[in-house]
Each structure stands twice: as structure tokens, then as C-alpha cells.
Image (spheres, rainbow, N blue to C red):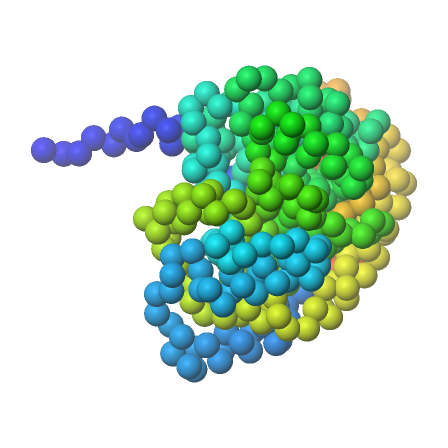
Length: 396
Ligand SMILES: Cc1ncc(COP(=O)(O)O)c(C=O)c1O
């Protein structure tokens, strides 16, 4: 008998990652011969630092190519705890750390291990695309907290408090934020932690961009006294060390949660690639010199992008304080009958001007697009010139 193609109900609760879709569309156009400027990709254009790549080559030569413990090698888990201690003053033991196949996987494991159907998860808007889908996949309920330009997209403890109920299990904070570049002050983050810990709610801090701050000094909320009991850190080596393809992330959390997440991982991916884990040990313990070099270049590009966007009449842009994204409000281009939301804007921009951006709908707002400035100044200049002309044409 032929198997039916009916899929599991839970798979229909999620959609394909829109950021990945933009890259795929841009790629397709490029293969067809179009001269595309790609502002869609959320990945560093820098090479992985040579010392890190060399550690992987040495791992292959030493035949370090077999299974490791499902939650990562003790060596790497210790190295991650050491790095986090050196950078932020936290005190995690290897039993409170696991290595995952990228930071995204740490978040997926956590949500699956923590969220029951009907549990509420508070997510500030704009949000990184994946949170919503992984919460939905677990049967959880997303409770969105809006932020806007007027407050620099910074969420506050008091707005979060209005969204808490008996069913709230988790609050997710991503600072610096993808896509807005907003950074929470230490005071506000502390107030959010005070609130969640008082109410017995877990706080997930997604530290993916924690080293890319343009004004404040990096900090981790997990370093506060008592934070380790209810804070979960999702970390990633992808952006900090330009290692997106190596797929190494981590979680720092109470040992029981790490145990549950590791159990799940042991039945899905098993260990992250052994060779990439050796490279990650070097990233954690070796020279950190590449990080400020990349940050300085991102700052230069950020300043250029914001200045250039401000020359386009009607476009609003909040100065990003971290990460490598600008999140302009382009709604000035709506109403001409040609585009009415950011999905249409992005699709027309790609079709007519060959510039790829991610529509704000992917992040929960419909008046914005995300521009990744993790690309060269030449590309930024070319793409922003095209964007300016595109908006002028639409408004004419
Ligand atoms: C906010 C945020 N968190 C986590 C991740 C996960 O990154 P990775 O899975 O490459 O470690 C990303 C990647 O874009 C991100 O933007």
C-alpha cells in the first residue's frame, strides 16, 4: 500500500526561515546572471581567523574525527565556561554547559525541553525569526511585546510585566537585537531579570551578538548574583569568530536543564562535529585579537549606512547600538499602489533594483526592512544608491 503524504500536524505550525529564503532568492537571481547586491545574509564577510581554522586542520591530522560526548567534549565545555568567565565574570561548571550545532540549536533544544503546550513565552518585537517558530513547534504560545522607533526598539521591564500571566514560562531577550540593533542597558536588563526571577519565570538571554556593541561594554545578565538559577544563556561562535558554517553554539543553564537538552540532542544530532569542536576550543582559548578588528570595521559600515539612509527623504532609522543590522522604516514608500507592506517592498526591490533585504514581516513588523551591513563598503554604497533610487521612483 502506498504511504500517504500527510505530514505531522506540528510541522504546519512553522514556516521556512524567511532570512534563509531571501538568501536563496538572491542566489537564484545571481545564478541567472543578475548583478545582485545582497543585504540579506546575517553572516560576517570576514574569513574565520587562521588560528581557529588551523586547529581544525590539526584535529583532522590527529584523527580527531570520531563521535564525542553528545553534549560536546569536556575540553570544549570547560573552555566555554572559562571564556564566559573571562569575558563576563560568570561562574559556570562544565556540567552547566553543553555544546550545540549552532546557537539556533541551543534555543531549539531549550524550548523543546522547557515548554509544554499552552505555556506562554514572552518575545519582544521585532524578534529574531526563529523564536516564534520553535515556540509554536513546541505547542507554546508566543506573547509579543511591541517596541518601536520612539524608544529605540528597547523593551522595558514594565512593558514586559504587563504581558506576564500565570502561564508565562519564559521571557526571551536578545541584546544586541537582530534585527533592530537595539541594546538594553545593564539597568533595564537587571530590572527584567528581577521581574522574571521574582515571578519564577525563566529568562533566556540570546548572546549571539554580545561582543558586537558600539557604545556600551559587553555584559552578561548571567553574571548577576542568583541569576544562574533561572537564566539560560544561548551562545554562538558564528558571528563573534566568523564561524557560521562550523555550526558551534552553546547553552549555559542549570544542570537539570542542560541534562534534558543533552538527552534530546543525543537522539537528534548527537555531538556537534568533532573537528569543529577542536576549532572552537581554539576560538575560546586562543587569541581574541580578531574580534575588535571586526567590530571596528562593522562600526565604520554602520556609520556609513545610517548616514546614507538618513539622506533618503522619509526613511526613519534608529542608530543601531550593536550587532550588524540596520532596520529602517521604509513605510514612506507605501500608498503608491505599488507596494503596501515590507514583503511587497522587498520583493519589488529585488526584482526591480536587484537588492536583497529581509522584509520586516519576518521579524514581526511591517514597516521595516533589515539591511545586513556585514558586507563590503563597495557593496553597501552600490546597494544603498539603488535603494534610494528605488524609493524615489516609487514615490514619484
Ligand atoms: C539573534 C540570533 N540568535 C541566534 C542565532 C543563531 O546563530 P547560529 O545558529 O549560527 O549560531 C542567530 C543567527 O543569525 C541570531 O541572529
